[in-house]
Length: 254
Image (cartoon, rainbow, N blue to C red):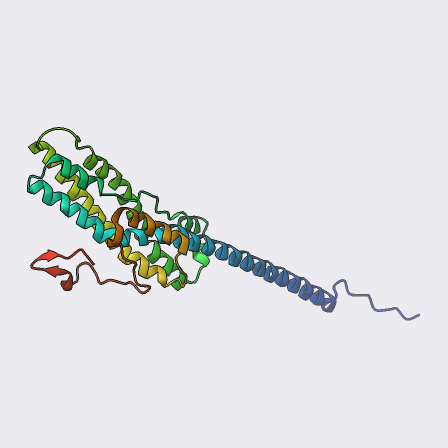
């Protein structure tokens, strides 16, 4: 009786096929997981961009626009106060000039881009797109801080007593200090605006028209026909450009 050959304990062909199936299964699972993660990050990037677009073009941008249009008018009002003090105008006239100075106090926010970095979403954005957002937001914290300081400066300016005789030397000094502080901070706001608005245009959206009109109307309420709309492609030259100086003094009425 012929004995059958003993069946090998290990079938290399069968085991190899099973190993390939397992490896392919693992690779497919990893690929599916990667695709799911990529899709999830794309969704997060879209949500982050939507938040930044709204914050810039609905919230911050119209406010920045409002500060840009009010700049020459505010500087003129403040210069008139300084001239009145230097020429010893009476208290009543000076109080009237001070009443004509108004600054819109609001917040300039950068919460959306902070959130994008904190959640690591920024790392998944195209670098050129991320850089455009970084540039658009670059001066927003400065504007927020400066605008808050303006509130104190304006309060000091308006603290001049409305009754009394000629201004004392101490009163003159306090008025001039407040005026110079407001003029300096307004220049900071304007320089920030001349950086922010052109960089925002690179993102390809438009300022919310209703919000922009709200801040323009606010400016016109206090400064009248002095307020002029900015052209759509407004991009003034650097404040340090030689053409901005005449006889060694900066020209601020752009």
